[in-house]
Image (cartoon, rainbow, N blue to C red):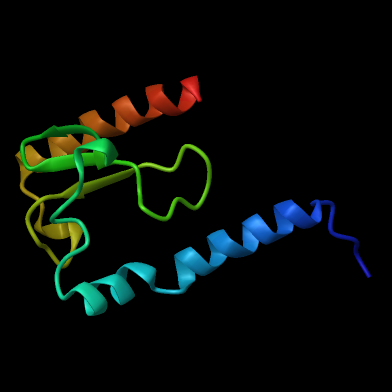
Length: 103
């Protein structure tokens, strides 16, 4: 049997992140609160906002340096983004890359 190289604390942290990702926490919050979890983003979580697009720190980060780029308007697929929104997403990816490199 292969031994896990992670400490028990790191294993627990990894399990928590897996649960956040696959456990549907955002959907559970939507059901509990009755609204979109991203509509009321607090300023302390917003890194940058422009053109209806937000660069934010997720409520349930999966890893250190985890950032999210989300539109303010409700869409079902990224295919619904306008060309202008895509340009902003591209810009935010560049900003996020610079931030992550500093972390």
